[in-house]
Image (cartoon, rainbow over all chains, first blue to last red; front, side, top):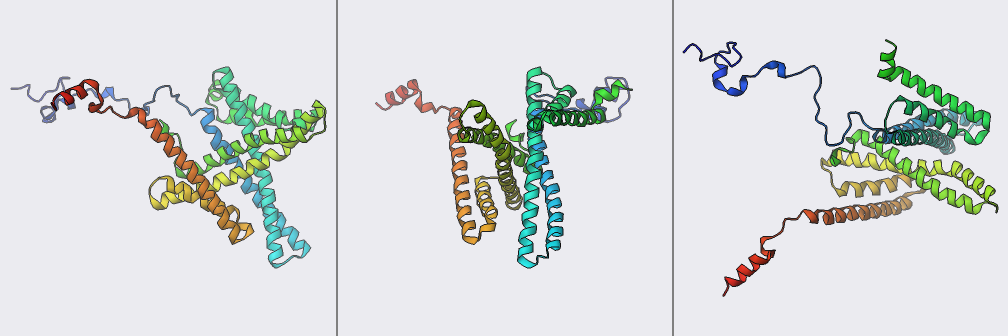
Length: 182
Length: 161
């Protein structure tokens, strides 16, 4: 029979079409351009702010500990060399400098991260949506809040610094703003 | 899915450090606010100011202590998971003991041993409570035994005559 080796779409497939009916499909059904994911019930495509919050806070604390520890180590070695300490006293002093500075910078950066993440989560809950406005607003609020006890001028300066940092971050990384300027 | 809500092991350390810091700041903040309120001179404005100043000073320190504890605990936990190649409550208990020992290292060997004991016992209590709760929670999924149904009981009794 002339039609033994012809698939349902009219192209000659050779012996393969007689092996299995599952091999007769139109390859255009497979869209290999986009990655295909399965999302569970109620899950959104991007990770929410709350899930990212702990990683951000942890990274700020650990980064602050590294920076503060390095600064404290440098200062400690310099100060003990100037004061002429040696041996066990010097080691204890250097350790004290390192841990004190490390703890200070770590907890400062951590508090800033907690404020930023907290206000971000609250804003996204209150507004019901998550976009760059939340990021910039929570940066500004964090700056205001962090310096709120140091007088009005410092408070406003802190808010301006927070606003500038988060605006720069959004300008670099946000797709929506990039597409807007194309 | 709940089992995928934790990060894989190296990144879990950062996550746990952040979570512990947040708990320390929030819990310590509430605690220090009450303490500052009580220790301030009388008059509501001075009390509120005293509360605010105490929170600003002390809450980050509590947060930092919690963060160090959480980070060291998570590091030991991930190391044990990697070495033993399994995840079970013993990892948490041993990590708690090791964390207690490491954080008391400046105070000499007897203090380290005591802290290790306290840490291990505390985590054993926490893990035991978790196991108990999961056991009680899984009771609802237990399939009913056919011998408990009334008409089967009656049938079984009738057939013994």
